[in-house]
Length: 107
Image (cartoon, rainbow, N blue to C red; front, side, top):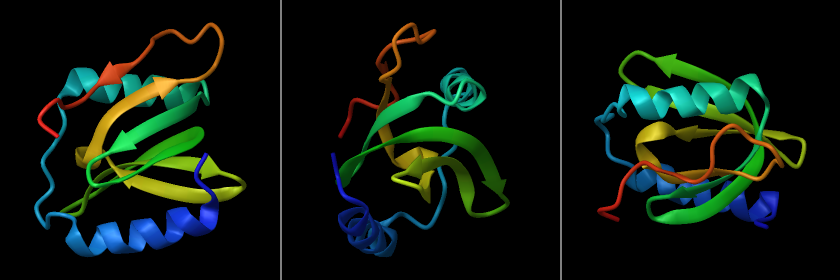
């Protein structure tokens, strides 16, 4: 698992290279994000050009002009991930209502 210090450094580098224009994700995919937050699933999230992140899903956030985000608790710290950077999510909880969900295959 990625340690928080590495996550912070990697995310700062990623934010500098992240596309300026948010590309909305498919509504069906957003439903999985919302379900993960409702049930507070522990998720492994693979991202474009960044290290995977493992954390507990807390909530979503939409910022006009900035995009949609999922907020995770990663080792007691709040981490937000912009949804158009997600390659896949995988709940790690036994009995989760869904398995591995792939958001994009082109990366």
